[in-house]
Length: 531
Image 1 (cartoon, rainbow, N blue to C red):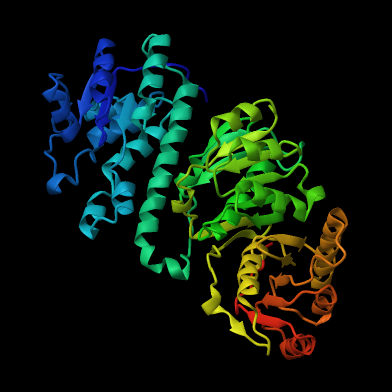
Image 2: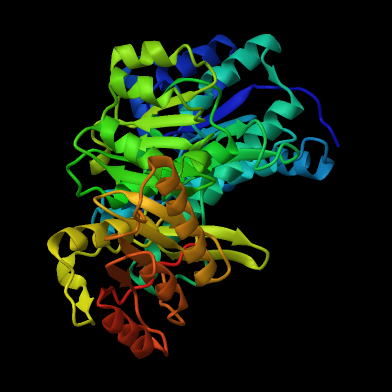
């Protein structure tokens, strides 16, 4: 039942963060609101010359157990929890000389900060708030009559509301603040739980609490009839949220998915010093290349699959100058991502108002991804370690008679880094630090191989080449070859070396075929499925 407006006559305040508390209480006093304050809060206010009523003057008890017990008393909680329309409740208050409390202002001990800083056990335990969380929950439960403020960010909103309503709060205002209080308390308990099971995390805790905060509503979801929003979880690395969008419409649901895939791609090449450019379409790379310059890298990446590149996303591991920009804008792209853009580039790009332009900062290599990732399925939530495995030459096992030469080895590692970012089944052909054919997302490995070959044949047509672009190229497969058919197709086009995880029942047949054709094969021992 809606209770309407409640005049604020009496408040209790107990805050750890004292910022803004002096001005807040002075405004309360201007409305003749009686203020009760707990120990630290009362001391802070008195230092500023503001007199308040001590909690112990209400309870008749001094703080106990070195401050562990202060507000946990019927004289406090009776005043908060009493239903003003229940005669028995009002009678109980009168018989026990308890005055109603209309406003509870309380934040909580900074437990999360203590845990994040990995403070010692005793410090963390003592920062588990008991009295504060009880105040919040009691006030939120009785929001029909009591207003609760759980963070100093709510001070101004409350004071403006008070001024607009003659010192009273509306039922809807109290309800919304109660929601905030319960959100605060549930998150707090989740953080405490997470800290207690921290040593068991590798085993995956029996219960997993995922805190997420709304960052922004999105125009629509994957399709225009779907609603969508972006939430940030407690485990995400905040550094990746610190990007700058210079122009264009807000990033859409699909833009953010492609942005995420783009980040995954360049993080895999974090150790590369040369310029590298990737072109992403529907979360799949359709062209990736290195170059002596960013311009050369872009041109080579674009040439890999110019048809698929249309409407995609360009990402560069190096800053973009106006010369590169002039080339990029000759084709329609949804978004360009780079560490930075020079002023001339930004001026030129401003003429393409619909193109989203995002800089991720020159320190992007120091940014990290969270250790775990999760996704929603009909049965619940899948939770797994993020695949951060990176290979080097020493990790690879040669299983053929022929050794790859140094250039081939470099291309093999390059191709493996790319195929890790492709939806399975994934096949990548590469040569001289550039993809020349990518097959992704096919139900069979042979189909992905055929797709990648077809892409390379278009490159042959575009360049007017006599030989296949795959002549002397390398091949990467995200999982083992169940048969030699994919390899047969690739070898017929001239590939010289292959990298794959191995692990098939027919590995020996595949290796024998490679030896028969005189190509080299390296095994990673690690699969790179991506779904």
